[in-house]
Length: 296
Image: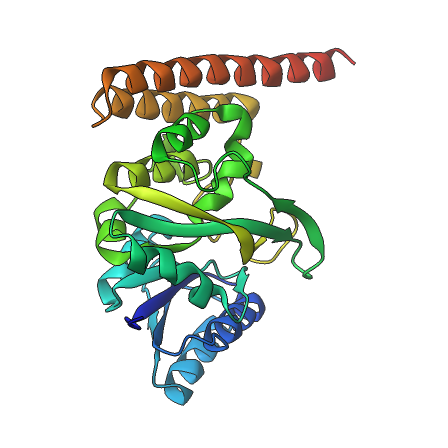
């Protein structure tokens, strides 16, 4: 089996200690034909010093520092332009890979040209590496993209599905997606909750392979350094009404692209029905929960 160049891109901001762990995991891959690209979103900690040293010490590491913080989506888009690999793994600066992650994620992409994104079950940990949960996808692994599409439209599974954006992807496909759609709330930009939109874009380009083993380790939300890395306004800074607007914008975007998708009318009707039902049910449940809390 051939060994194409794989680019591991690491967008970062003010997470020097966690960045060091992410880079170490990328350098420790048993798949050797890789390049590592770090794009620093104008960090104010000692990330620039660390990045410069890493690129000086290792010929396959490229470090670039932005003059201003351009947001995560544009930062990723810039890293993609710098990358030369046929396949790309977008590694968050607070996540890490297992030594054989690339080796296990790559074969489906080489065997089937219609697969554009290879992912797996995901281990979620806290910033110290303690296991929080494992995301399993028994209904998704090994099934066709139509069933996958219906699952993505289900807001009740949104949190589980969100981590599926992590994985190894065709670089040509990623470049056509990024920068991903931004969500604007009162003049602030957030990328929180855009994962279902990204997954839907993946399916417009081909199929997603979901392996049943665990190749990916994701650091879940919580108290950690550099929490503004990925957006100008994090979800924790949003009011309940702001969060409602995020959901509505997601719903409208998914609804519109369903109408203009390449799928049959039957699939469009099914996915639209699931989207409307799950959105309404999920939103009602959240509203009732907040009403009950306000009455206490």
